[in-house]
Image (cartoon, rainbow, N blue to C red; front, side, top):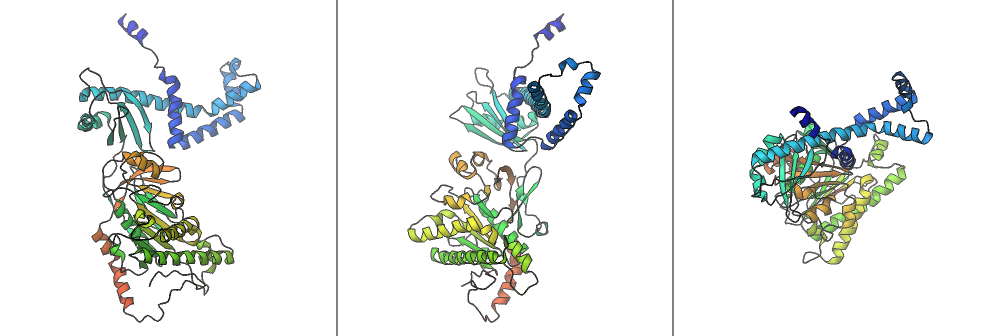
Length: 478
């Protein structure tokens, strides 16, 4: 009798009817749907319909009365069959959600996270941020966020998850917990240079894979973040990798903070580090002229980009074109007028960088801009709009993160040096960027540095800038 009574009290959770569609919405929005599974399901459903296997099955089961006779209803029936895979996935995710909710309640109870009235935090939502990271939002139940942070190890053990950060939303009385089922590395070693092909470098390591970027597919980069987040280390390892893996690639490194960030690159061949706005303006003017010359060359040879040009002229006497990487560290120092530069000089620099960002890809001119301040004053909007790849380290607040990424992910990153969000097109992932110390970078570059010193001792027969040669070769030297 007791068993019958308990069974009668059981009821279906009403969320089973609408929760699958919520899971599908987040799956579409965050690109976390199992595309291979769904593609196979749709293909099998199409085969099922086109071969009339559904009619055969209903006939065998003597359920032909269920087959729709009206054309419109038959269309709905076919559409429902094609989309049934999505529905089953949504139901699966709903089951996972409901089980997680039960585990969460038990974990909160065993951790003692309740207020004086005996109330526990309530689950508001649990949604994916990317393929590996999820955001769990709870009511705070008038508990200080410090209580959640203190109980973090207990929650991780009870829920079998890895918590990246716990963020208080005081204005809403809620707490956000960013977590994953796999640990994120807190330190990512700098990989061997042999891992990279030409124009490639490692952006970082996610929980499951290494993210490699190529200047051929992602020609320009924006790197943003507060001091100490890892921005300077990222620039160091990117420049080192590209320099050592690409013979002939030239670099213009702009750092108006006395050149401190780029001093380890100063005496290298193929590298120029101007230290004043006046010098920067002259070098960028040369780059702009080179861009014009190269566009004429590509048009004259009827090719679409630098790779097609070099392939066409390979083996001929004409010189091949080298790629040029222009790196601007702390854009605010360059884009804001002040004692160091007049408004007209800054406007000229903005126009040149904007043109390189718009037209440089085909001609082999690449732009990497780093900034602590992502606002429109410190970062030219036209330049930013053409920086296709974004590496964002922790930002101080939501508006800064919104300016860089279009969402608040950068403001939610844990305070771990090197932790960043990488955005390329619609894809956005959290990762740990590789660490390359100054001493390690100097060791890797030492051979090139010695070669440069040996060449400097040789007589220089021609020190003129070769901007107007047929090959439009860049030379940023004095």
